[in-house]
Length: 453
Image 1 (cartoon, rainbow, N blue to C red):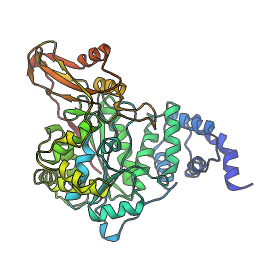
Image 2 (image 1 turned 135 degrees about the horizontal axis):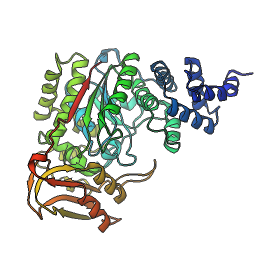
Image 3 (image 1 turned 90 degrees about the horizontal axis):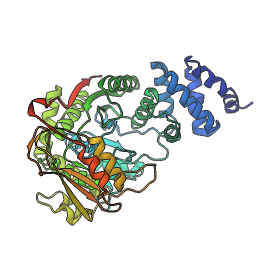
Image 4 (image 1 turned 180 degrees about the vertical axis):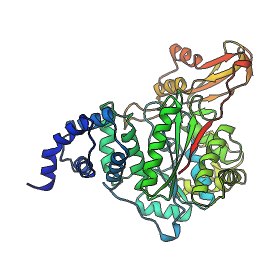
């Protein structure tokens, strides 16, 4: 009997073992990942194993073995020797208005790092970095490994989609997790994220693990368990891995939606961004610079990153990255000029509607999840992979937390086309804003905790 036939025949035994809460050996995990990749086990069996893992969890050794096997299921990138110690990346667990990658990648490149950022598309209420960049005319997120090397050599950063031969086992498992309600499993999330980063052959990785009502994890405790799991596995694979635990209740920055977030990212790169974006970019970037020895401390790293945003060095990298990825030099230069008319280049939605405050007081909360869900229904997001998105749909916050407002003051500008904004959606959006007495304002730092390697 051939090796893989033998594995396929014994596979129900592996499922039973995990279902009963026993530990799988490295060999059994290898059989599973190999079977997923080679299609020698049935989808129903993969689904059963995913559910068994979801129900019983995995110990650290199993999670590490799963991640390693997934990583080795496809191509593992290799870099020139002179880049040793410089290849870094960031992963975020997703939020509302999370445009950090667009600012962080060029800032790190301006500090001499190489950033091969392999990103994803938006699904459900979270926006995808690739969708944001595709709202720039000509931006191509699909680059061959050869082109990737060229852009990194030339510019220092690129933001691209996952190639077919990078972690193929994850593609199958990711799609099946979605339809078997096994998305929120610690070992499965760890395996999916860290295997892709491992295949990038990174020297250092920083994770932005979000918690709050607009994040996958609602409380700090569960977000911290995930962060710890990913940090442990990343470091075990030889990648210096650290994590930042950040609050995700209000949208990050003032804009939500693909085109609007590109505009806000460009404003940040011009040194005019909101404080919360700046705090996340400098915290994540500073931690990476410290991990690869390009800064003596986290604080020094934060200052170095901040300088690249103030002096135009990061903006220049973003401009060159756009050109490297297919944008004409004229459009790239225009978007990066000081007083550009963004709507001369980026598509503006046909309609804008401003919502007004229905009372007076201090802004206590803005529920990012509610805003994201309404925008999703207006066409800004997708319900299943492959759905088209309308890049121009989005919302701009016209006020910020802690601000004192009067009744009838505009607080949210919604950009939409078809479908139109319904009365019910207006009502939902009005419910996202909480006003009250100033003494009820709860001010908490955006970054709750940092987990070092």
